[in-house]
Length: 247
Image 1 (cartoon, one colour):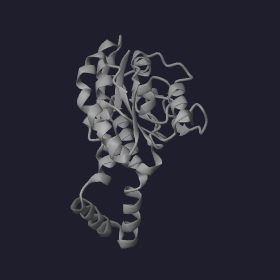
Image 2: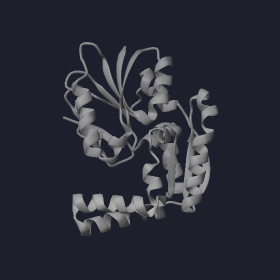
Image 3: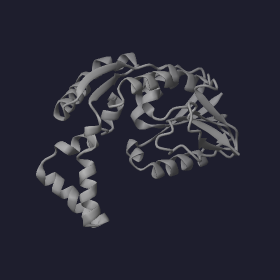
Image 4: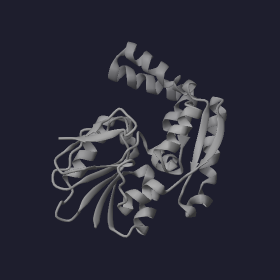
C-alpha cells in the first residue's frame, strides 16, 4: 500500500521515524505549525494538500493531525480514502491514546503540554509573550490598534496577558523516539523556566508511539481512527469518537 501522509511539522520527527519502520511506502508532506493559530487557514492548507494528491499514485491519504479546533472538519478526498485519528489535538497522538489524554485532563484540566517538536517549531512564542519587555508589548499593542482599532486592541492585550492564569501545570511529553532522549535536555530546561515564570508546577509524561504506528502501519481500528470513503466529508461528532463522516 502507498500512503500520502499530511502532518503538522511539530510531529515531523515522530512521523518520519514511524514512516521509516512502516511496511508500506510512505510519502510525507508537512504543514507549518503556525497554521494552528488560525484554524481556517489550516483547513484551507489541508484541503489544498488533499486536492493536490495524485490519486493514481496513492491508495490512501493519512492525516497526522487531530480535530485541531475543527480545522480537519469538512474535509473531503474526492478519489481515494482519507484516514485521521479520532482525537481533539496532537497531544493525544503524543500520549498514544485518547483514553490517556482524557485521564490527564480529568486529573488536571489546567495542564499545558509541551513536546520537543512543538518547541523546535517556535511553539513557545505565545507562552513567552507575557514575559517580554515593555517595548515588545507596546509594539504588539500598536499592531493591534492598526488592525482592529483601539478598543479591540485593549481587549486583545488583556486576553493575551491573562490566558496563562487558566493553567497551573507545564507537562513535558518526552519523545517516544528513543534516539531523541539525548536531545531533550535544553527543551525541558525551557519548559521548567517558563513554568517558574508563570508559577506553574512542572512534570514529565512518557511519550507513546502507539497511534503513530497504527496510523502509518494501516492498523485503522474504528475506535481510534476514522476512515472516510471517497467523496464523503469529515464532521465533528461531539462525542467520545470526536469525528465522523457525512455524505
